[in-house]
Length: 446
Image 1 (cartoon, one colour):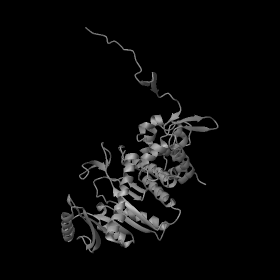
Image 2 (cartoon, helix red, strand yellow; image 1 turned 180 degrees about the vertical axis):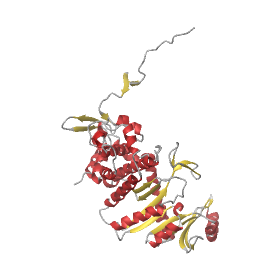
Image 3 (cartoon, helix red, strand yellow; image 1 turned 45 degrees about the horizontal axis):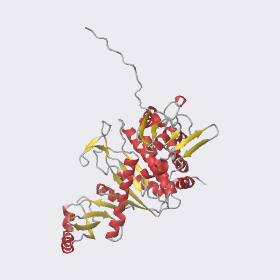
Image 4 (cartoon, rainbow, N blue to C red; image 1 turned 90 degrees about the horizontal axis):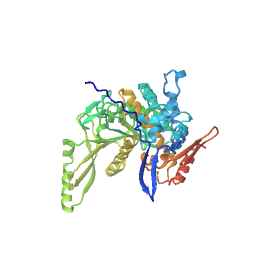
């Protein structure tokens, strides 16, 4: 016997509202039917910072747009701003833009009044990226750094560091990395204090120092063209201790201070200092920490270089550390004040990856992932500009970009628009009202 399947009525299963427990016998209902309200009322500060330094316009000018313009509703500048402002505001995925494209605050910041690009449009745009585009965007980033100085700097310390960018698909250029114990990319970052100059995506199958001297050479050439007498210092961990790199610095009048990994010869040369530190610890029971200077040459070097040794002994045992440098100064000063300051760069990389989603490299194609890394970098530059230019001397002068987003960007607002005016009615009880106006004024040219 055949049974005919009964057709059930089609129902709308999308939830429209939710009732929370009552408050003083009053029903508490929550829905998303408030109309033109935004959670990102502070996004106009991003627009203000962008207009002040001309970042997105400069990048759009150097990116070739091969699309048939007569068929395009969204120009390259608008697409670029949509992605950069979205990342800065905390929206890491392209899917977020399916709703975000209707947000009045985001539209106003991008200088449009109509619906923004869809996630599919943004995806197609990202996949048009190529190596020439990466080169040109990096040129803009370096020019932005140079333009940020009102006076000629006396010294610039260029911090180089690599980090892992875990991948979970079959992206081009993914390889397994033994140290990190997973499949990943190995992007290289270059910072000067808090300012970002380079974010270069690399496969993880190569040496961590790959292409470092080429990038350093290009940076030194451009920076000395702008400031011929500037003192440049290259700083990095032991992953960048390569004879070729150190030799290049010595030949081009660039100072360096770089970590060098422990080895049997170095430990043998410092053995008497380690024994003395151990003896003093056993007598006092307190951590012993001392600094020494010695000359050392690896077999591949060909000549001796200055090594700073930190000899430390604690209840965990001996912990010697070494750096190689051609800087002058007392050993402890060079180690603590010159070398260890590079640790702050790791905080800047965390801002990139954790707060600005530099690790969202889920595209299949290599250059699209490099583009995503650079979009995150451009978002960082905007937020760092706000911090450096407008927040000095305030409670947020050293705040992480995630804190800046929470306190200055994530402000609820009602958007009122007509043919003559766009009004942002920000939350009346926002605790950072005066700071918001202070930042807006500081970012206004004049």
